[in-house]
Length: 404
Picture 1 (cartoon, rainbow, N blue to C red):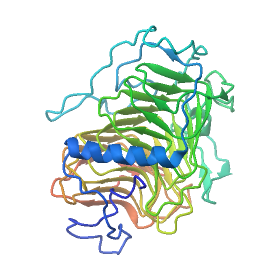
Picture 2 (picture 1 turned 180 degrees about the vertical axis):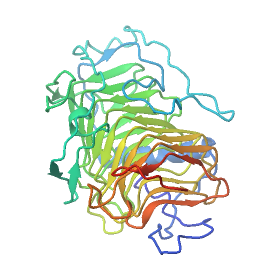
Picture 3 (picture 1 turned 60 degrees about the vertical axis):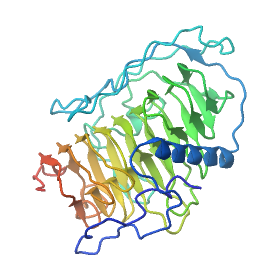
Picture 4 (picture 1 turned 180 degrees about the horizontal axis):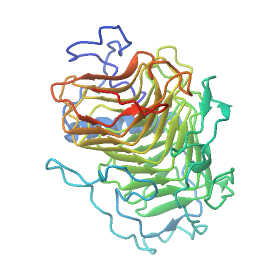
């Protein structure tokens, strides 16, 4: 089973579609009926994880990993939301639990890791030079937003103030079961299944082919992925699209992720900040490409990222309550480029409520974007009984305000 098959691909519950006929996801057979965020939904996710394990050819072996104290879940180093909207939960939803420090003696079998290098957030440099993106269209470095030189593992690119990292092969377990595990400076080939709390992956590269790169199914996993590149290698052959990272209990910081049908899935609780997520692509003929999507969540923070979708469908961000309600959402200070509509906010079988969409920029052709309207059809599609707070969202090229 591919993890996209119980996602937004079903149009059930949609009151209407945009009048201009933009491509919404045609109804597909949903293999698992999931209601709410109870044990049955988690069991369904577990089945997905088992399927991923079966298809990923995973092995269990040994590597140098270390155990150490982790920052609290939701801590936001680097550039922060410009409005002061923090990652704390609202509307009665408690903020994600801070993790306890992991003891260095938690695992007798784990050996000491390479010393972690500092990972201070770099300030992007302005550039008017076009580089060829994976989608065949030019991609520009935009001042103030994440790009190749300040996301992913530090490679010493011009403008990167982080300490350069030399990767070494990862030969450790692909299923992580030791709390507090830290994977640092590794070149990882294959799918990582996270089954422990307070795991950190940093200064690394993960490459996969037709399988999810990182799977976390515990809302309180407290997984952190920092300064890491995640590459699907454009080998996603699924029908709907495989998200490289999912589904819950994680914080992503300065991540460069690209090259799968979908990039990031947040079904539960998740934060992504200061990251470049781009070029959703695969070989499946009927994929519905999303950079970030959620179909069921209680806490979402999407803060100061660059999100590029070179396709005419579906989105840079799709929040659509297909398999459960979505609430407590902050989308702030991002740069969005492409998709059918760049941003979707939709009721479906359930309701989406309690959201703030603020201070975002939208790109358009010919000033570095893929399409003249931002997305192929426009910047946003909103179809819900409760609409988000919408303020100070504008075109990147001239700062003209975009109304709701």
